[in-house]
Length: 65
Image (tube, rainbow, N blue to C red; front, side):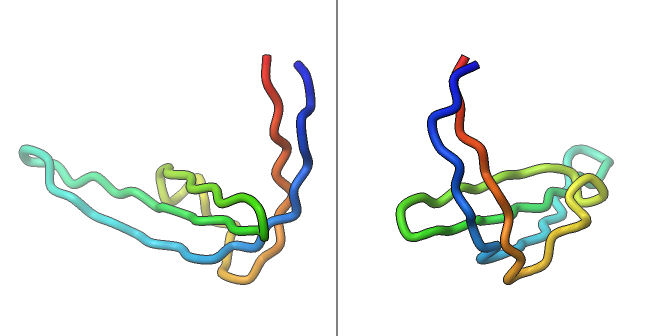
């Protein structure tokens, strides 16, 4: 795996969404990270992405296989 960049990014926005699919509800948490040069958005289950709050600084490693 080739490491291309390491970016320090700030959590810009967190959005929780609940949608109804058939008879079940599906929950999604969307987190947007931002730096001067790059913006990244991730989506996942809210209970997996619990440790983030707006304003947190995270390290994002960008690589390719």
